[in-house]
Length: 63
Image 1 (cartoon, rainbow, N blue to C red):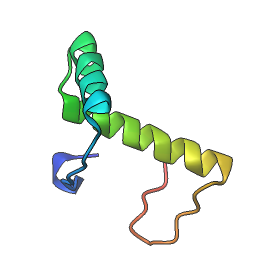
Image 2 (image 1 turned 60 degrees about the vertical axis):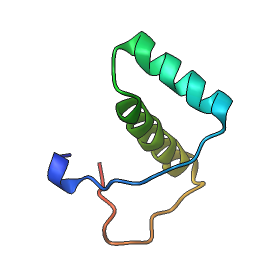
Image 3 (image 1 turned 120 degrees about the vertical axis):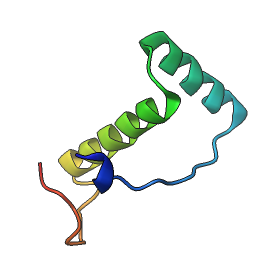
Image 4 (image 1 turned 60 degrees about the horizontal axis):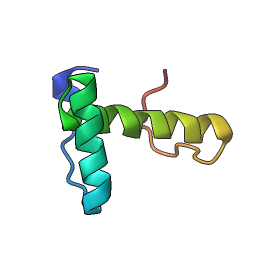
């Protein structure tokens, strides 16, 4: 995935979740946004694998 093919979004997290995400990112030496991107992609992949999410748009990239 290239930078040009990425979309910027905004999310709102509870303070505790935001603090834990920031702490985790610091432990891994990466930006919070990078860790959040990884976690969202991981969640989508797991949902597809379990059959909880079936892509319906043509924009979905198959891996």
